[in-house]
Length: 193
Ligand SMILES: [Zn+2]
Image (cartoon, rainbow, N blue to C red):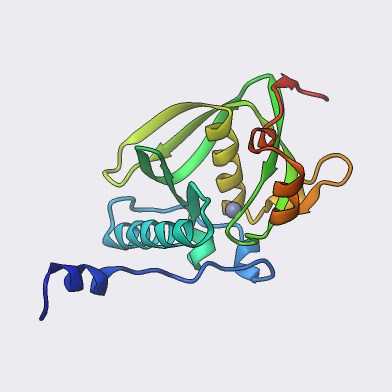
């Protein structure tokens, strides 16, 4: 390879197209990963990371990406929230708390739209990492709703399928005109059954 390190790096970046609403792959029930330590999973994880970072620069939001969003119908999610980074293989929510909250949700697969959805306020997550270790996390608030959103992707479910209340859709610029950023999340409330 000629050129400096920068060129070498760029040559190995793999930013993939994020599949958009209407693409049938977003509706597939994804298959579990059999070998979390395989090179294929490592490559997929790298592509998810590169694609997420590029998308975040373009849209100025985004904390995670699910494999089907870049065309790979397998159960892998990449999360980058502040300093927390994880490739989550075969993730599962094993428990949820007794409270829900409302979230104005967004998604790279329909980036201009916000949807009000209902999510569990607390959840327990289990996943396998790239080393093959099983991890468990207790999630609350924004992290809880994020992982519920991403795990839904692995079952072909989108935020758009779960609107709550009156007038649950808003284009992003309209939402921003009419709400404060803090209104993205409602308070935790006992679950309505
Ligand atoms: Zn999404």
